[in-house]
Amino acid sequence: MDSIIPLGAEILKSSWMVLLDSSAYVLFGFFISGLLKAYLPDGLIKKHLGRGNISGVIKASLIGIPIPLCSCGVLPAAAGLKEQGASKGAVSSFMISTPETGVDSIAITYALLDPVMTILRPLTAFVTAITTGLFVHFFDSEEAPEPIPVSC
Image (cartoon, rainbow, N blue to C red):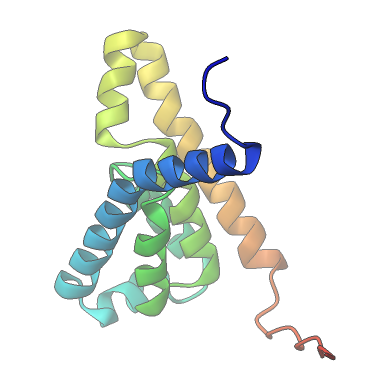
């Protein structure tokens, strides 16, 4: 027999490899978040995405479609938007539309599939992002939940 690696060690090794693979994307997300924080004034984000209305959800979805971030990298960017005053619905819409498409994935869709799918992919991302943002906008309560007491 070859070397026998205990199952726990194999799980730890695989988990570490997943973390290593995703780390570049998370760092890229932090970079995009830093750019948003450095170059977009807080008032601009609050004005367009922070009012808590439907137009903020639509704008956040449109902003997210061309940005080439994966699901790992979109989290820091969305946190930066929330920190700058974007509403929950707008942040949710941004988080859905961004990893679904990007300029890079739209180009690959055109190269590997056909022009119809190239149009349908960002359109579907836009519709699902708006739907999610509207659900959050209309059904999320603004009050924070009461903390659950923990006894030791």
